Image (tube, rainbow over all chains, first blue to last red):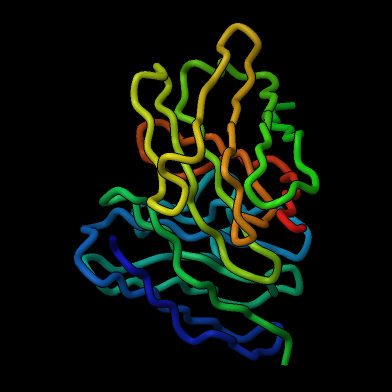
Amino acid sequence: EIVLTQSPATLSLSPGERATLSCRPSQSVSSYLAWYQQKPGQAPRLLIYDASNRATGIPARFSGSGSGTDFTLTISSLEPEDFAVYYCQQRSNWPLTFGPGTKVEIK
Amino acid sequence: EVQLLESGGGLVQPGGSLRLSCAASRFTFSSYGMSWVRQAPGKGLEWVSTISGSGGNTYYADSVKGRFTISGDNSKNILYLQMNSLRVEDTAVYYCAKVWGNTWYFDLWGRGTLVTVSS
């Protein structure tokens, strides 16, 4: 099973600041990694697929990069609605696995 | 509007069974893989099971293999998760999710249904 490690666990930032989230798989997943956003009481929403492609309707302030065992989700300038929990997910190998999440909170 | 709606959650005793349903609206159910993903209270996401669009392939997390069965009724556009031999650690919100194309990512999620396993 591929284990995904996300860091930091919590990121405390102010609106307008840049957020940088990390996801590190225990073995290479090539570019087969996605990022999701989840707000309290809501289902997750797909943001980024295959490491760097924005899903339909996702604002340009969200970007993804990386390959292999080192991935980054960047939010260029935090909007109030961006404070949420972010999960990475790999599809390289079964079982599909998610990371434990990074909570982006208002400082 | 394209949507998924889960039902069937509730309180069940350890060792009991429950069947979850997920009704899909406004898309051709049989054209896509479908999955169940769960989230224990206050915890992260855990993939549970996936069925391919053709229904010919099913995949399970080790934690549920042999106890849970995923299936679909293409004529009714409904996805099921039969859960047997339930354990306390199966307590979670269970989300139905549509697989996006051939990617095994999830681009459409339901609102979830809560399963509580407790005596």
